[in-house]
Image 1 (tube, rainbow, N blue to C red):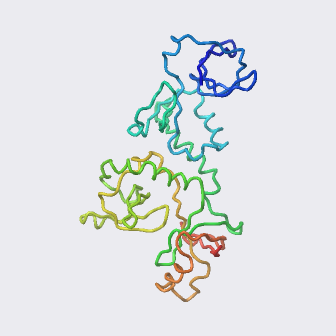
Image 2: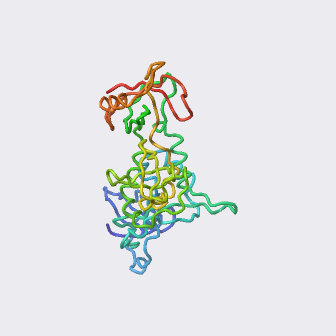
Image 3: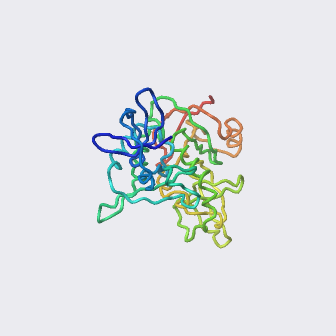
Length: 318
């Protein structure tokens, strides 16, 4: 834990000793942020005047990318997009940081940053959003298999009255969405509700039955004069009338929330109802009893597109 001056590559650096192993020690470079092995013989006592300047390397998190912390892919992209570049950063959780101590380079709550590349004269590039788009496009877990492909495990999130079945495929993207809402939601609700609601746009909405926050698309504003709008919860598949006072901009949590794929995937049972028959309320009730919400099932794509957003699947209880 003691700070020394270390001679590395003909230059001197301020380092903090993390671990000592024989003639070598692992050191954290206060002004660069990396750790490396340094021979003990290359460490020198450092004059107090060189400790007046706080560490120039501060540990931060990239907003929306926390669940990719151990991904080799994200490390490669970070090196390509960020390393050695001059960027502009926006701290998303400034109010909740409390007493961040830059002198230690660490805090109980680390800054959550959105980074922008402002080198272009035309537009500022949100690098968090660009990284997420790359990761999601490469994340096979966010997609359903092609016809004839292997069976996959999904979770039934909602069964509609018309026989539509909404399922979720377990993925790091879904986990990230839930985590961000749980962690940042309480602070987001302290902000003013969204104004000038737009049909088809995503917002953060409170579901009345459980009081929790979810991503939601505004469907219908015909009841706006009554103070409510109809929304579709895009990660679960159900719809509900929500008070306009309980709808917030998604940017209150993170500017990248609206860019993440919708997690509720619409399906139907193959061959149900049979030709010449129609789906009924009794069929909905029977299916809900057979496959409760959050039930884990195995699905296999049986046919191609039924509509632009609807796939027919065989669902089997696991």
